[in-house]
Length: 488
Image (cartoon, rainbow, N blue to C red):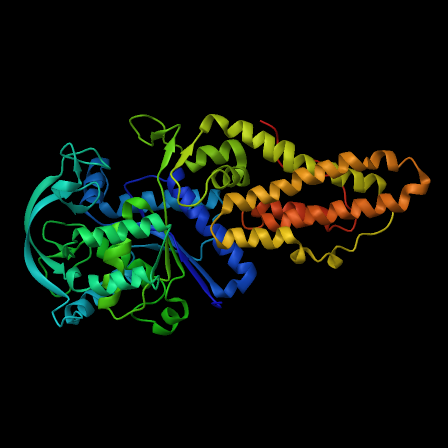
């Protein structure tokens, strides 16, 4: 097993304000980072997120807002940082593509690409003319066959026709090698449906792509061509290596690279599964170990849209359900990789049933009985929680990205503990002096189960886990004055 764990989210485009789609990806990364910090040690885990801040769309939006592009980026990037703080996201770095450290590194990468040769001995990049369709919303060149009713399927807008001189990356020379690596899972793409989609794109024929733009004004300057700016995808994708020191601090870079997990949504599959590994091959760098691609979020069966007014922000959820309540509601319903349909009208019901009446009530119930009835001390350090079969099962679920299954297992323990209490009736045992030892014994079992639940909840609901642990490892266990989760 690897002794380090490096995980990334995509860097989020600053034209979007943070919503639950961004939140879900970032929460997934946070859970994995927290889990592996427990397993490997804090110093052996690196969790990166950030914002993608260049491109025509950013410049246009800044102009509409009456701000300079940099101030516009500062403003929106700040919203993402604020949202991640409200969700208790514990990232190790937050990269912004307008930072000097990133810009200088990207310019060095361009020089390396200019000097690189493909497996077939051709220059990795070359100058050429592009004539075709471009979707500003996606910041990508688009073909006729990708359109639906003449419009971009994601943005429902007609692309513009462009004709300009660019630098191109010779993707075609890398596809044979890349295809083999994907087929052999040397470069693993999950779920399998996304791996097959990527191989399908290769079979259909993927063209060389532009790595610079002549008409963009807000972007990284190409060091060897003053007429050009970096195409946003080369600039953005490089964040995964520039943030960990490439190409200036190779010792730090080699500590973390290759990345263990890239997390992303399906709309940027092509860029991450084809463009990015090919660029790394041109730089003679190892490929990512694994990419995890999840589906889109819909709200009550409909795509999130400002015009429909159904965009849900993390701030809205945290205000109503608290940080850990929000984390639970977003992480518990779905299996990884599936399309995720949020039933917002069920949030109150699930919050009350699972958190207030389930977990919160159990903590209150057991702490109250221990406070009232326990005679002898509890030596919690003697509980070997990690040998419990449920502990091992939850770890396996997390390592297979089945967070909902892990949470289901934890809440099964909660329900089962409630059933044990109802069957044993400790309040009845407390009335019989001859049952004191039996009562002490079963109360200690309940405490052990509660501490197991707290430990298993660490990566998912870290604040709640800490509160529960403090209650049940205290010298004198007492029922908390405030409930863990207030009913809505």
